[in-house]
Length: 64
Image (cartoon, rainbow, N blue to C red; front, side):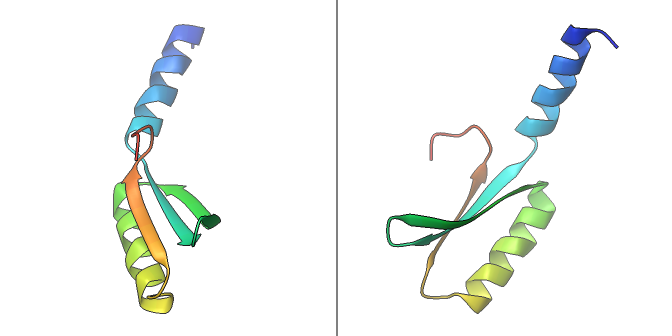
């Protein structure tokens, strides 16, 4: 596999992932990168367990 092909595969796999983060005020206390379906389930579980904390879920590489 050429370097260009490896870079393309890496870009595609990163682009199809989401980052779920849990915040305690301004402090990031948990950070997970996963496929969108898993990220959605992980976000739901974290919200159920830690409802008072801010939970974010956004595509990897977005400006959020």
